[in-house]
Length: 422
Ligand code: FNR
Image 1 (spheres, rainbow, N blue to C red):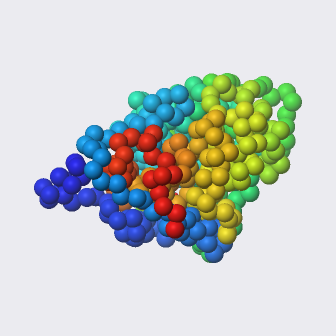
Image 2 (cartoon, rainbow, N blue to C red):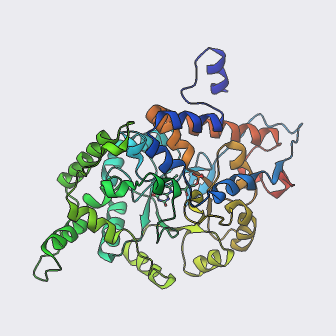
Image 3 (cartoon, rainbow, N blue to C red):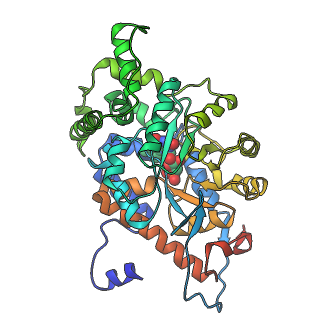
């Protein structure tokens, strides 16, 4: 009702409420490269379209006359009661959208009580993000590096900087065939963007030194365990420099990387490993005592395998259609996976969520909590942290209205009976 009241009093929204208009406004606000990177998907982008189309197969039943004057959006997630069933998905390289990138997103998320999943490819070191929004709830998303020492170090830092959980993303052991980026001959990471987690990390710095010297040197002392404030400050400086070079102008101007070549090469070496298997996952348990969630589960058998591996949550995602063209749309497998998981661990759902009614449908089909991806980055690009806040509030407001109009007063009441299959 705050949002309607603001409208009545003549306060114009900063970001378009309509989701297509939001994307169009972001296209205008961002450089061609930034928009292509964010909006783009794999191949002919059929998965991106299918993710959206899947929502069209479900309809919400209106149920009046059920006193819905007080409504509660809260859910339990990772042992904590959260005010809303929403989460922000990890989005890397947000310096492309706004110079304050993850710092602004973290503040906006914290102001709404929405947990923020900080990307492994975030633009600012996780310690700087923690400082920017001290009261906020954060998870850290890990891309499993080819260097186990680096994985261990990143997870140690996540724990030390107050993250509540670790999200291991499993669908990016190879980078997808990103048509728009290929056409623009553009990959942000090679411009040293989105690699602040690494540049601020003592293990990574050690790997860079070894590479510059042309190999491992057994006599080199092991790196310090603690991340120094100096290293974090250096990470922030590099991120700012990257953002200044990008801005909202063409990133083609950003031909000179703010990092030495050895660091960029090291990043490309360690970024991920296609050799990763289920057996390796056990190592994560040694590296951290935080809850572990596997992101990128789409096959029901993998959901069961994840349970067998003893993880604390699964995150159904096809990376917003950025990895495989003509991949399985996530909403289509959500009911089966939810049935097989049977409440044993929480299920996070993403890919294709654009508005509150989408969140409602995913919750009705068995998601514990729903992650928002591209839309908040559009808000960030258009109006910084205030834009993120507004996008998230709009999603929550529509969810609340849908909850009430379908005759429910809490998320726990919402189940399959709330929907009609088309
Ligand atoms: C992503 N995604 C992602 N996932 C992840 O685990 N780590 C990351 O660093 C990123 N980076 C990233 C950047 C950008 C620009 C996008 C659009 C996506 C995937 C993300 O977490 C989420 O799964 C998708 O965004 C969900 O799809 P929709 O809702 O955006 O279509």
